Length: 309
Ligand code: RIB
Image (cartoon, rainbow, N blue to C red; front, side, top):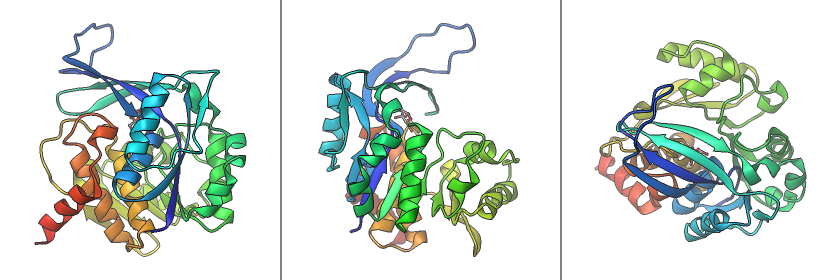
């Protein structure tokens, strides 16, 4: 198993379960409230651990109860947390999340300690970055840190997965050039390219524009339909697994990205790695919350096996 480094955000999620999202100017009652460990980076690291990966997480939290709970959740999943930093000058990141009856969410973030995961932090983490083979990151921490990580990883020939969430209007061509994997969902792909993304043909065309800028593989996650893999050999749909009733889609994308990272680190071929990612994500949406919803490798393998028997 090759080593994985995940770099990114850690948030304590304040989750409000609602029937419908509140409309502008409306006050509504929540059916349930929970504090759950989350953050796109921490979810991805947690999922790498639960799926059996050898994963080191680079992130920052505050010196508070939320920071302690996040580190404990990651350690319970088998993630190496020794490079994480507990800061005394700010709080742990917070995400206020509303989840409606269809399992859809809307999220507001307070970055807190995540705002310090910058270039300087990456310089201090070069040893673990250079030791790893697979690097997974997203865009919920400062660009300066993410871009420094990508440049270092590219220089050393690592496999790089960039989940462009939250999506900016564009990414510098210098960053896209040579990126091994970019994994937007449909909305993120539309925002990144400024192109229409309603139909499968439009998704493939938009992904193609990123391939032209030097990305080697674009994997567009398309929710309950699975993912579309686009690269120089063409494009194909990697179908989703159907598992159960969708109750909460929070962290489904994070689980997908981690499944891809673990599959590649294990040496699976690309379509098999995407299969692992799809299966893990399908299970995660049937459970509430971010990190508690992520399945183990045993559960994920059982779902894959049930399809092949
Ligand atoms: O991707 C889901 C995550 O986004 C949540 O856990 C929340 O913390 C936000 O970062």
